[in-house]
Length: 238
Picture 1 (tube, rainbow, N blue to C red):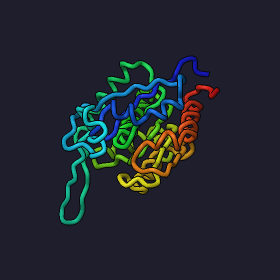
Picture 2: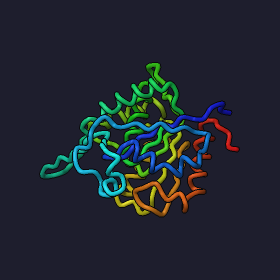
Picture 3: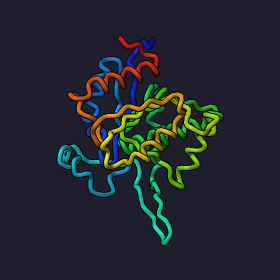
Picture 4: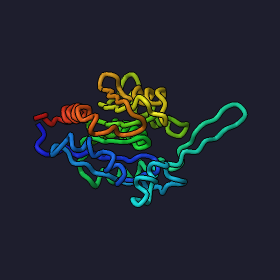
């Protein structure tokens, strides 16, 4: 049984910031109560373009806003692909912040933050055979997508190869998905889930879109997620 609240490192979404995510997670944090403390960090890169309209409307005074990388689309006559400019610097910053925190029991990410949490986990798992252990016990990924690009593929495969026989990331994962998400397609969401070992992942769904669902409507859902995370991290549910 845990003797202290678990620490959850929280990674915000694309072109938002830690204050926005703190607001978005209000109902989830209430479900954990005193059993968890949440640490919110900002990405190192300022937003390279306009922030999402809803962010501007509801959180405009809460800027500046940030992103974990700049997603750039490259097309030719036969195909197109994405590159994530700056993701390695974000990984380096997060590694330094985790070292400074001393203990992290779970990593939570929303949207681009969920993809960033996946890359961060893969980086730690890829180092496992060289004496570095993943310092957290579970990833909580909300409205996330698989972050595979030509630049990140080696890291993702390296992390999977070192941690499991089937090439998936061998760490428990909790996925929260909106059935009406118009930003992340069902295919991209499913691909993220499949990036993690099937024996230790759980999926929760809600009727909303690309968001943390309403705490009024989804109180039991948040309680179930909290119970799952606390169980994985060794904190008894009372």
